[in-house]
Image (cartoon, rainbow, N blue to C red):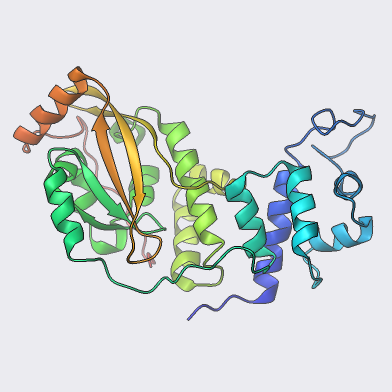
Length: 296
């Protein structure tokens, strides 16, 4: 059962609005820069002016006070803060405005899902839930990420393994860019699960285990899952450039299948070699991953 309290949701809403306001310069918003600005980005009164709402009302909204927000007002604030679609949906959920349909998180993984994963081999493919827990994968994925799939269920999570692993063992070359995107996707999912112990405990545990994650989490960036380039390294063959394709599944809600397709012939040959030599270590300096004592 979701145990979201109004105070929790309002506090999250206030923090999100502040983080979006602070990233916009007066020049970007068409305002003069002014002098003696003590805070980064726009002031509250400037956001209120540009959005056409009362200064006191907007201040109360950002402070997390129990006030109501209409669709029209949230749309105006979204435009003023330059929110993209993922951020706009996140704002609506936090404001508890029923403009974004809430997903049904019940349901089991369809039996045919594993069949599809296996048919995709030799392309590495995996199914994640909204928290990046691994739900299913194929053998090609196992060859790429053996340290992830062999973890106990409690830590069989892509974010957990990427943030707690030593840098020399991280399989992602474009690490900073990719981790920031994954954390932003997690934050968007978190807005749909405020107050749920599994989500709250996961974020708290990973924040304690990784200061880097805690810093990224504090930015309040949000994003949707999407297709993008990912560059991996493997100790036996070197770098592999792939296109990561994310596809939503019908059940359970928020589950998605991610397929990694090599971008050029050299990468295709390296993927095929890894699939044919599953005994080859993925990293040159394997280390034991720390495990949270309170993971989920």
